[in-house]
Image (cartoon, rainbow, N blue to C red; front, side):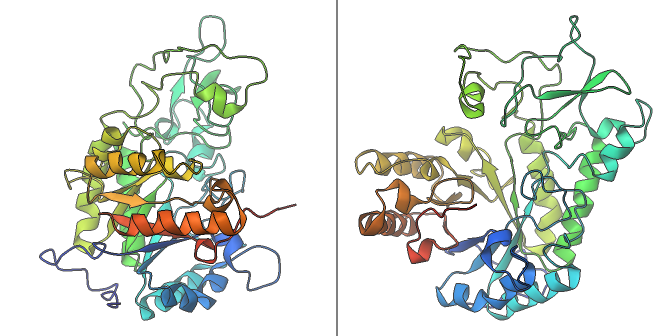
Length: 386
């Protein structure tokens, strides 16, 4: 493996992108390695075991959020984009982990969560002071519907309406996930400026790339119309089933998302950093448009294979459709922190391990960048957590 360039010396624009032909490895920080014995993984634990990751022949690590967070969504509710949650260490631990990764020839990709913040983030705390607050327009606020209820029929991924009432102002704020995760207003130039600075901060700290959470959800339709509902919500449905009763034409997948990433592309270009988007749609051409032109995202995670059971007829066709739509701009995964492990989905035991190995081997023969999820190399099945 070729060691990364020094963090203080950005890659030459004329050089080939470092991620071409590489294999990545996802580290879920809180469950990877615990260096203190408190039961929660941390950055020092990551640093102590990177020799194993490098031994596998991988070229980069993607680490899940380690930022300060109240923890309502396992760190995906960020209250400070420039810090480290004390349960995971501190910035010195981050720097030591980055240095260890680079010494081993591993590039470092960090998760960034731009669709929403924590409700404990100073921006949102300030926004609650009232409609005239300086950061009020950092978020999405609407007056109630005529009946006093939410302003439209949007629903949360995690259940219930995608709107919560702020009693102080009488307005609702939007959250596509938990009420503790208010969505940012990406039509506000001030929000874009804030994230330009956040990206530069981590690039200056030696980060080699960003995995972008909910990359397809940042910009919402400016008129906030109701989403079409082709299927009724039935009693007993879970949050995911309810979410799938709607066609998400106005809360997700707006064309203006691409303008956000074209701007980000220009921000990170001097550092040679990579942008990988989590684009949670199953339609290959909708996924491909985020990276196919090369001026927005550099790659997109295609998540459908992480949900699929073993089907030797259908699986290759699913992969072929995405490969044909975007031959070089896909980050391939069959395992990730959000879904059941492939060994379990593919039948469990030795049979599941053989099948998982076969599918991942196929992924390494395609264009794009395959990613292992921690423990996938060991053929791990789903664990049982208290």
